[in-house]
Length: 371
Image (cartoon, rainbow, N blue to C red; front, top):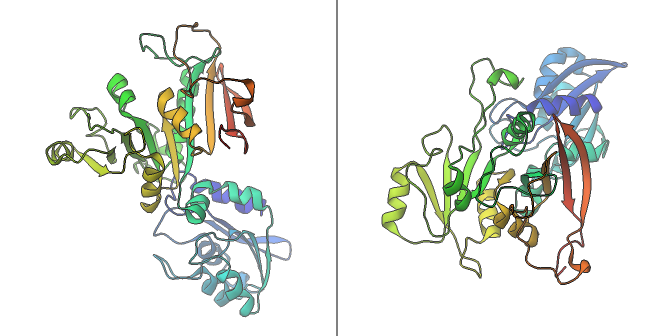
């Protein structure tokens, strides 16, 4: 199963919106075939492993990170392929959360006389597809918030200057976060201040799953723009990939202007403060098969998703310098009256990226005010 997980990881930047899946066929202590899913519409991991094994698949054990599908989508069911190949045993990392499958694939194989074992390295298999898993189970994408700050927790000087807080190595690391994401979200304030591209700037040859010269998949760029102030000359609009503007404004003229400039406009419900309702937007993105969302924003949006319990993971790059008390902070969370109102975090990972530190954390289960 560990080998199947390593294979699945090869599709980390290409399979979206499909899950990343790896499969290994073994017989008499030897690997006879293996495969991994590369992208939507192409063969699934199980079929590639069966093709690689040929006749050796008969009587073999299949190790697959995700329950084999049992329905017709863009490709035929993998359960049928495994049964036709004569596989005698299937070891599954995790059940498929897709309601079209969810246990039915396991039942189909058992009914066909195949021994089925489930839950092997389940946590590791689940970690391959946090967005697909959450979208299928809860109708929401997996949300990461990426922030860069000085060691004293400052993201920009008082005048707004912020380039560059972190090193080139850290900024390159962010490109890999972008490349695995289905969408990158920011606020109109960041767009007006920085005019960012919000695209993936990695050479295709750096991603093993891509053919040489094949373009890198660009995540959907999403701008939270409640009052529809989008500059029609924004740098990102003509770039490869799509830009979605989320607004509350029902203004046909401004919507038409934004559309003519290259943006797609989604008019959603406002929240109590008159801004775009964040949960409504995330549910809309999930319906568009958006699995993983990366939020790159200022303290207002970052604070809002934390307070509304909408963030799954925080990725914080800390640079080894100090920017002073007048510089801008990481989150707008409002004043805290006591230490009991702090937002506790569970630290998941700490590592050095060039001269900077990268921290991965999640908000603790009881860690938000009002919980």
